[in-house]
Image (tube, rainbow, N blue to C red; front, side, top):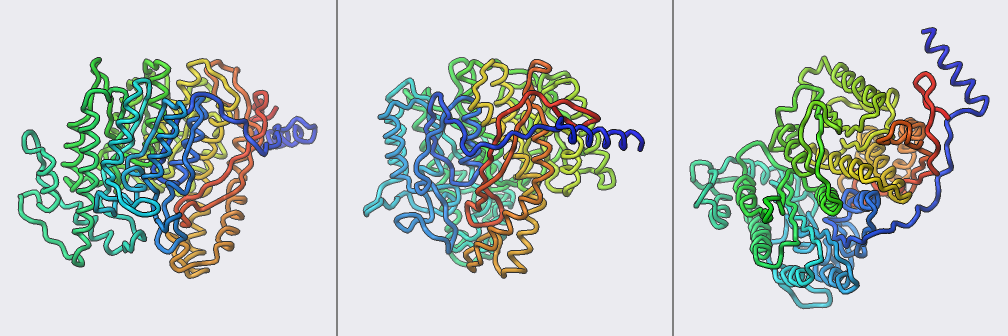
Length: 591
């Protein structure tokens, strides 16, 4: 008690004498990104596919070029449509845009196939025909359109082209083209039914398609759904797999060795479900180079695809030779799937992502990866995250780089986040993730952490890149700590009980959008105070002890709901100038 009182008095004295933590005033504008340009067609317009990819690219010294948002935006039922009355993106216009970048001399591309085939991830779960309507009238084959684009990009052997694809999840999207929750649940249950596992000569495209309708014993699966509902879903699933297969066949031809593919497995199941034969079929088509290295990857997670492709592109260009990583789990459930939508144990997901980035597991690894899992024993929750906090503080004292992953899937409430905010230095982390499903969280945290570590190892130090890194770390921490478990929960209740609306779509029925916006802004202002204060007193990790800098001011503005639903938000992050390293007095950082 005496020590705490002394610390408090000393802290007050420092503040009164003007020696408190320095908060530089956040700037209205960030310096423009300079460096090699990457032309990027995103999966859709959610923050993980747009602004967070921009931050990550700029943190590595790239400038990301994107089409106009209206060309790749998704709109749910009842919401204002895009031009030409579309709920989805517009593939023909996007292909035209990519060709314009090629004509302008671009030679780096990250392109979402779901967007270029179907107008986005959600639309890819609903479209059943190969034909696409053209703006102004007429139709075009979606497969032919993409094949023409790939052929044009293949003409320049100096191009590096990453294609992002996905294995369709078990059920379509609620609230898109009339999809209901009841249909979602029924179709997902049908998709989870075990199928016969195909292998060797039996693993053909047509047999995979046939397995959609047959159980593990080969008999026809029967399910009670409205006529046409299941058929439409299976037709969309067949279309999706056939399109992926055509891309595979195209890239198998000579002249496509400078193309790479990153396939993500969308929401899945531990069962031998409808996806398993699709996964096996696509995995068999993955290419390797003459040197035996992988050209293509198939991993769990979809919303982190662009992160992983971008970082792999950077590592390839900079000649990254890999490194070691020490992975430590806290919670005791790493040997099982981390949530209901995963199909692999967390350890398997982790191992596959480590391999993607050239990391080798080692107890004395250069990179420290600390992972909080769901608690094996509810009574021991504080002990699990307490042990993690102790190791995290030790890493800080030893100047060891840390990637932090919250794979607790909400089981710790806000207690873990509150302890991190009070007892650690959040701005010291290389990366943090915890907002989405756990396969995505793993890919997000590792891609961002490896990116930062490799960038620092390269010796590069661009001011725009440093500030972009700070924004991507702040975005992860603030959204998970402040929005996910605090503000969003309040909004769910307010929208349902106070406004009589649906948190999954503010337009069916239409609610008072200004009232929801005001509630969001006030909630974030209140919830983010402690986290922002922590960041402003943090120092960045530096490979050279004492060689880092301190965070400056952090401010948030322009909160938004990208899909007019409460699930996720976007926001602008303003930063002040960085400072000299903050000094620590009784556990509190000052200058």
